[in-house]
Amino acid sequence: LLPEVGKALNEYTWEEISIVSASGLASEYWSVGDCKEIVLNGTIGTLTLSNFPTCVFILGFDHNGAGGSIDFGTFKSALSGGVDMCLIDSNYAATSTGGSKLFNMSHTTASNAGGWKSTDIRYDVLGSTDVKNGNASETCATNPVPGTMMAALPIDLRSVMKPMTIYTDNVGGSNVNASISATIDYLPLLSEFEIFGTRTLANTYEKNYQAQYQYYKNGNSPKKYRHTELTNSAGWWGRSPRYTGSGNFFYSSGNSVHDPANISKGLAPIFRV
Image 1: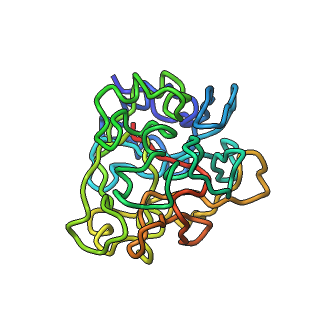
Image 2: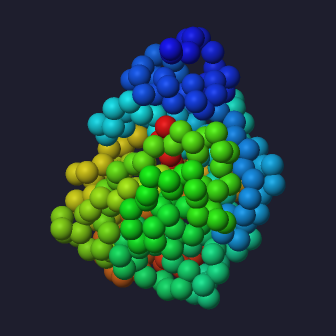
């Protein structure tokens, strides 16, 4: 049975949200931008959080043809009137190639070779896949890679998360259609087009497989602030490699910019229920 209509998103359990999502009626219950509080617990790369309250919010319903789904963005500082924020580690804006699990796309090089699919951050910081350089398995969310954001999410949320088939330039430093391919992810970063609805830095062909999220279509700002200091903004990584050059990935600082893969930036992944 479907849950009753008329309550705020935060008053429903994740199991109830999942039931409504699968029915295809989610937009009759809630609106894009509505928030639900979660608590993060655990080590994410080099960042340790203990009972850290934050909010996730609805980015869109049935996005890009994915019927019976709700896509959520991260993070908000409050259920109502909060600011959009990202998680940062203690080495924010620093470069490293020493192998430490910082919030950099690559822990050992300044290269975008292999695109999103081959990034270190995808596997050992986000836990978006449990197969390094490969597609996530069906148990990626319920049996997460240790020390990742996935493992720090509440169990009741992870139990209803759905796999996402997303398209990205998985070659890097290229601008041809052949470089675009699908990956299966549970906690990916956003692409340039999914945020801005335009392409300036990504492979020209990425946008042909993507759609801008309704949250950003509605005029919400792509700027985010540090979870440690809500008046101080931070650049936050996206998954699109820069179409020219072998080193950089796209990130958002409120507009579309790029930096080498070995720089630590903010994290704000998405997920599907």
